[in-house]
Structure formats: structure tokens, C-alpha cells
Length: 390
Image (tube, rainbow, N blue to C red; front, side):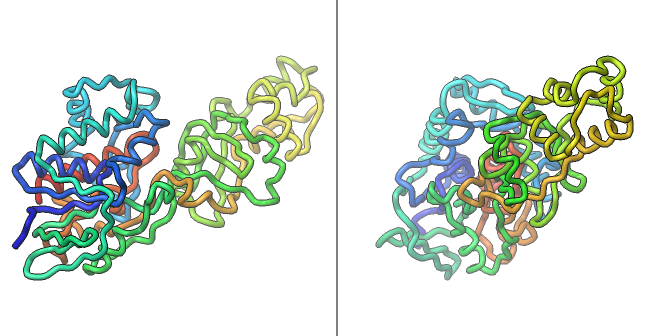
């Protein structure tokens, strides 16, 4: 005998969205989480203001072994749908940059809205209750929370990935997926700062310096701020490219993305008596210019340097290679690339083809968005899709 229509594991963004949608369709929903309060990762997102979606959401801004998988859910529940929900609750918001939407107030407003949406759907919440066992038989999923067994014909995995373990994040969803015969694409940290090795020690002196750069890895390019840290490279540009980067490969940084190739020759014509250090210090910052010039090994007044030398300096500054020694790992990663393989899921309903009644949504799935609200939009869209189907 089932005591619920659906059990959802994980009271984060995707889980609460799914629970609210299913509950408001008349389903008896149990939403369980090992944490004692819902939406803990939402609360720390966006500096506490929750970058809850992005106006430019499109499938090509997501990484997945199947780049087409996200199209269906994102197409049926888009940024405007979530904005309409936010506005229905009177939550004030603003666009920061590049289509990123934030609460004017606090991320707590988004959590409170989702909790209220769950209440409207009559969702039962079981918080502070870790899962001790999951089994399946006679068409029912049996989930043991502490000493109590709950049964339902549908089970939704919404427990996210292993990023930010201090929030209690684990690879739990992958273990359950494997238990029911689903494949898992090797997970790795994403939207994560890089570390630099001892040969790049020179750049440690720049800790705290930021610059507007273009960063490239293979054919992927981002134009945003980069930040030097005492361990390596961070800032939006670096977090973005980290999702694509592969170990033991270089990233290329353009420190002067707005300058034409021969801009130093123009400086030589216009201000020949000015030192190269001063010219670069005005284009970048003095600390950054000094460090880059120290590595290049060119000094002097621009009028005394050959055109060829100036071209080489400009070329080096526009295509500077860094080979990171690694990343700061899951502890600092905002999300996880990889996860439950989309090949075994329906893109329309998020249901596992091999295990009827089992669904996977949100970050647990091998769909990872860019920085800037894209991962929340995937949580809302995949949660909505499963909530319509369970």
C-alpha cells in the first residue's frame, strides 16, 4: 500500500519546485531532506541575494554529454515563467549584468515563496531525516527515513551533486541512480577557481587584483572579470572557463580585449618618450603591468623599442597562456559537471527509461549551466517537467 503518490529526495531548488507543481496537481507528495531546513544552498547563492534566473537562458549555455537534452524542459518552463511566479509574490528584483536577475532583498524570499508554493500543494515535508535505505518492489519505491518506511509509485532524485560539501552535499543521487541501473557521467567540480603551480609564483603578488579579460579554452571564450588570488585565478571569467577546462591543458587570457593588435605602435607614434611600463599601467593597472612585463622581460621608452618588439609584447598580452595545476575542488565549486546520464532519462518528463517511476532533476543530472542564474533556471525547468509528470 502506497502512503504517498510521490517521494522527492532533496528540498533544494529543483526538489521544492517539483513538489509544489506535483502537489498543486493533486498529488500526495512527501519532500524529504537530511538538512533541518529547506533551500540551504539557495540562501547562500548570489551573495545572499539569489541570482534566480537569467534572461538569456538558452540550451547552448549548458554543458551535457547530450547538448539537446535540456531543450524540452527549458522550452516549456522558461525564465519568464519563473519571473511571473516571483512577481506574483511581490518579490522585487533587478538585472545586474549579462541578464542575471537578483532579489533586491534576500534569497530568503525565494525560499519562502517555494515553501509557500509547497504548502499550497499540501506537500508533507520531512526535514532533518536522512535516508537509511531505498528499495523497489511490487511497483513501489520504499524509502526508509530514520525508523519509518514510506512507499510511493514515484521517486524523484533532487539531491544535487557533491559541490559545497560543507552544506552537506554528497554524491548520494549517483549511488541511488546506479542502484537502479542508470549510468553516471564522471562528475567533476565546475564554476570553480583555478590553482597555479610553483612556476607561476610571480602572480601570487597580484592577490586581490582584478582585470577585465577575455579567456579562452579551445573554442570556448568568455569576456568577464578575472581575479588573481593567493592560490591562483578566480573571478567570473575563470569560473566560467573552469567548467570546460581539462587537466594539464592551458587557458589563454587576453588582458587587452578591447585593443587592436597594433595599439602599441600607435602609442609609439603618439607618445614616444613614455615608458612601456607607464603605457601598460594605464591600460591595465600598474601592479598587473609590472608583473606581466617582468615575465616578458622588456623595458624602456616605447619610442626606443622596435615595431617588432612592440608587436610581440601586444601579441603576448592578448594571448597569455596559463596552465593551471588544478582547481580548488568541490569545496569551492558552485556546481558539478557530469552526473546522472541523460541517455537514460526522458527529456520531457525526467523519468528513467530503465526504472519506471524513478525521476532525476536539477544538478543531480548531467546538465550544467553557465555562471549567472542558468543553473537555477535548469532546477526550475527540470523540477517543473517532473512535477507535471509524476
